[in-house]
Length: 250
Image (cartoon, rainbow, N blue to C red; front, side):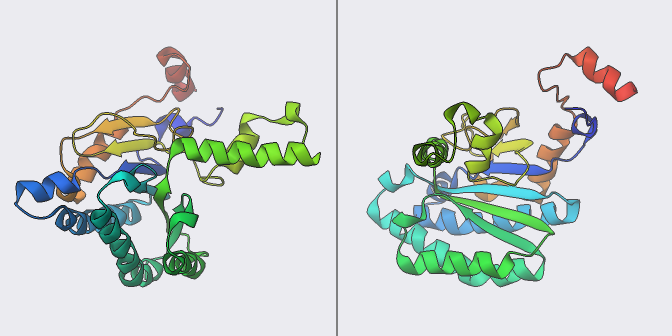
């Protein structure tokens, strides 16, 4: 990369977050797990507000993984209802503030009504440019890479593409975040230190940040603290620290 701005930028262009700890937050208070998911919506609003105020271009939130279907049926049903309610309540507010909404993941598992609401929300906000908010729902990093390779395999089978013409850039063009900058900064709340099948391809050079705060506790001040950590990182992209320093001095 010849652009030295990737080394000097103090704020990330793209933040990706695993919002972990809703259930534990509720359990600590003697509440049902679903109460934690509802409380977590306040943290979503806080993070979106900071991104807008700081000029961060893209925010990706891991809302529901492809593995989350293994949770109790009642909880999954409540999560789907919360998803629909959030689309109803929040999308027009997002639109008012210039936020573009995108949903990534395998939609076919969702009820037709939810699929329709997702499509309508995306269409309403498609031209907005203040912030792109990406919700990963029924998403998995392995699924993402698999669906991309299936697309390319089909093109090869049709004779539209030669196998030796497949490059990293071509694979990236078929992934769910195609057209978006790769995440600069990854945050996981809840004390776990793993990426849990989230954006496996896209996180290759992402700065990682883990906090013990449960997601409903992650407010604007906590996000600001995380962004301070990012600002101290030296991003080398395979170069040595000395090479980066010389680029900055040039």
